[in-house]
Length: 132
Image (cartoon, rainbow, N blue to C red; front, side, top):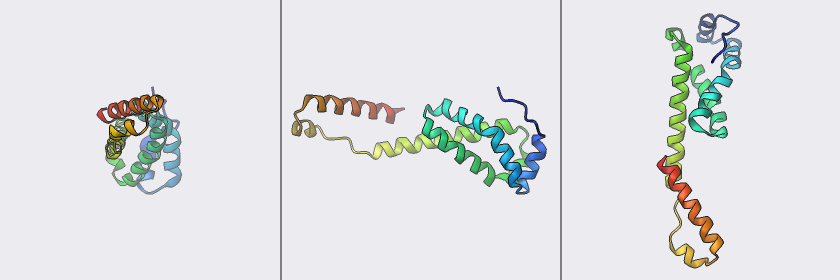
């Protein structure tokens, strides 16, 4: 459950909309852990979540002129995080689809049973990740 900010968030939003970087730093300090938690809950990836904190906060800064029209900043931020996570996961899945899956002839070229087992497990994991 988010904690109540020790500042007036609406005033801070107006300052940010005017380009006040110190006000944005306060907002970042208050919300970055929440953004990370939401991203981690959805993505299940620490590295993706860490990257998304920066991406989401940058997007909020870039859209700062629109912030005064936002009635519920928590809901707005959650929506921005959710969209960023899904966009990132889609990008990861697309990149994984571009990875060429080894041909079955690769197993014939390397008769090592351990190699074949690892390769089969890798391919299964890759296909599950792409499907997800």
